[in-house]
Image (cartoon, rainbow over all chains, first blue to last red; front, top):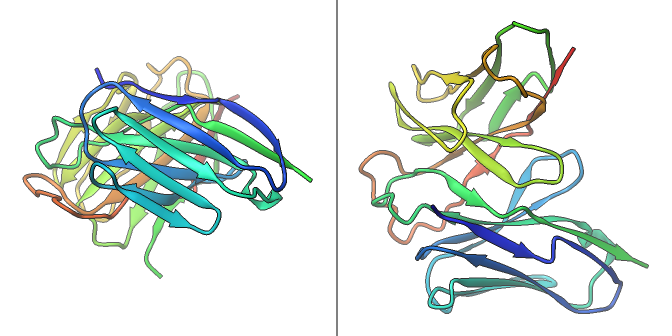
Length: 115
Length: 120
């Protein structure tokens, strides 16, 4: 059974600081997703990481994937209040044979950025 | 604009009642999914469909049923057998269905705005 663990689950930080959210998964997979969710809202796709060593950046967010360590990180640089949200990582079913079998999600990291 | 439409936004269920949540997409995606989200939790997969007239159980299918008669539509019925239906339900779709190798596709699953279901 594929398990996805995020940490921390809750993070309060000040504007201007840097921090990293970690996502570990239990079974080999070469496809990892990061999503953002605002309170009461749906999920917004941030990054799709397709291979070992993949790194993607958008604004103050940067995501990376190490498939050998089964680890992805979401790094926040010089945080601003607008980045306050819950961030989820999700992993593809590695046995899907290339088909679309659905994702396994972590529990999410609730991020609060204070002025 | 292409997207996924879920309705209703809020739904209340009485004891012993079945209710149906609607999900429609105009993205021309083959695959569609239903997830359940409980407060403070991640999403859990209920059902998914890779092609019309076919669907598969996810991790928590008990008490739910689906149909996929059209490519655009994937309704979810919450039956009376689901004893704890209160949750936020999210529908998603993606490219790549049955026997479709997604290869280097960088397309994520796209999500609707969700339906909040509560018990009266």
